[in-house]
Amino acid sequence: MGVYTLLLLALLTCAILPQSTPDPDDEACLTHLRGSLVDPNSNLKNWTGPNFKAPCSGLISYLHGATCNNGRIYKLSLSNLSLQGSLSPFLSNCTNLQSLDLSSNSLTGPIPPAAAALLPNLAVLNLSSNRLSGPIPPQLSLCAYLNVIDLHNNLLSGEIPQQLGLLARLSAFDVSNNRLSGPIPSLLGNRTRFNASSYEGNKGLYGYPLPPMKNKGVTILEIVGIGLGSGLLSLVLSFGAVCVWLRVSEHKMGVEEGKIGNLMPDY
Ligand SMILES: *[C@@H]1O[C@H](CO)[C@@H](O)[C@H](O)[C@H]1NC(C)=O
Ligand SMILES: *[C@@H]1O[C@H](CO)[C@@H](O)[C@H](O)[C@H]1NC(C)=O
Ligand SMILES: *[C@@H]1O[C@H](CO)[C@@H](O)[C@H](O)[C@H]1NC(C)=O
Ligand SMILES: *[C@@H]1O[C@H](CO)[C@@H](O)[C@H](O)[C@H]1NC(C)=O
Ligand SMILES: *[C@@H]1O[C@H](CO)[C@@H](O)[C@H](O)[C@H]1NC(C)=O
Ligand SMILES: *[C@@H]1O[C@H](CO)[C@@H](O)[C@H](O)[C@H]1NC(C)=O
Image (cartoon, rainbow, N blue to C red):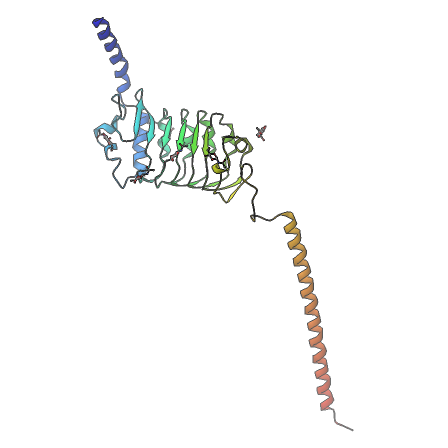
């Protein structure tokens, strides 16, 4: 029994050891991410030094916020750490990443489309409450396992990509409080799971499930009304101007006539 246990242990060790060699892709991913982030409170101070070169070399990760599985980074949770800076496109090198949570920081710049396109295992993306700008990359639709897309409270603009409606596994979707515009893709909008609270706080965004816009934009009736009104007004104004002009010239002529009359000697 003891021999078998030892054998099993030896086998396990053999199975684990080859995976403990640092993965060059994870290393590139984390090095560039660390380089693009600004960390004023030194939360990532152990993202440097000897442990950093082999982020998943032990059974556990030594890096704050990083979780390993089978020698690869599979979770990055760096929420609420006052992080500044931007998202590195090299995030795409963390190819085993399943969960990326950088919510409640002060990150700026765009969501790199390349990173979105090349994370085939991504299930959770939480970038909420930052200052990210630019469009929502349509490439997110290539992450077929996405369950959670939380992008609320940012400065994202442009339209919501139609393709996101193809993400069959989405169970949470929140893009509220951004600067998005255009129609809500119907394939997303009519998912009963996502109500208006997923979309509110975007001035230019419209369509179901948001309530119809009030006092925003102008209806056809209003356009016709404004057209007729301004037409009538200009007619009245020009008519008035003509009347005034006629009056003035009449008056002038009268005065001239009077003057001429006055200059004429009396016979
Ligand atoms: C990282 O990703 C880029 C772009 O996809 C790729 O060219 C590169 O080989 C990857 N690995 C490393 C270690 O940079
Ligand atoms: C790295 O930092 C985190 C928290 O800041 C800590 O929990 C962890 O033990 C540190 N790891 C090492 C190897 O110092
Ligand atoms: C965020 O971190 C600050 C301290 O840095 C703490 O006071 C606050 O409660 C945290 N918020 C959340 C939602 O964890
Ligand atoms: C995203 O993170 C925030 C905290 O930073 C949390 O409140 C929110 O529930 C998360 N979103 C999802 C869908 O879990
Ligand atoms: C949602 O919208 C799509 C596209 O317009 C349509 O094909 C589908 O039937 C709709 N589903 C529901 C439940 O309304
Ligand atoms: C919208 O859905 C969220 C959960 O997804 C729920 O907390 C909220 O009450 C819902 N709001 C309305 C108006 O139904």
